[in-house]
Image 1 (cartoon, helix red, strand yellow):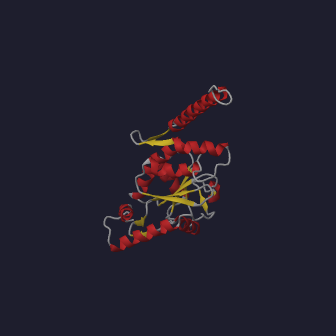
Image 2: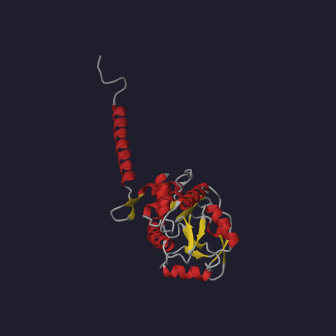
Image 3: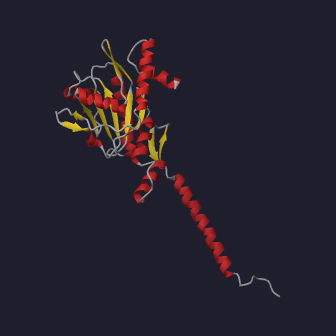
Length: 265
């Protein structure tokens, strides 16, 4: 816990951390963790064209939720720019259509749909299924409570956790990811659990296929990429084949043996 708090302090956009800031960090982290398992309400967000977007639109797939404010000059832009390659790699490994990402402005008086559109353009976010959305105060407050996102006003901006909330297919908060720099596994691994149903019972062929994909989608730290490694299952298959072959030979030899054994009176 102390190590995690030390990391959290780095993600507050302030130059020095005083005692009251440490208390804020502790409260923010506690609020964030306490939200795990909560169902997100069907808040109404707004896309850059002004079209309402119910949060339930994203049900049926895992969802990454980030909250930022557009006038932020340090942590928020870094979060988005670091998240981009991690999401890109997750889409490459799991499929671009397998999950969604939404980034929401929490400074509702300034983070208009147009400002969110400009933020996406300025940060070069052009990946499929990643949407930048605005919210009014009522919907923003409800969403922030549900994902455990706390922020505190300060001169010139806000203090807040750099947090990515991972939401499952049914709209429940599954995991929190903290940081301003994201290596691909910290984003892809929880998504793998949800996309391939790590904790779902195996009830059909598709479930078995997904479970194989879960264990065979592995990360290579040298290349920074995910790849499919079926060698474990190939080894199991070869082992079963050899065992079957041995059993077949033994059964044939047993059948060839004369009744009562091979001895003579």
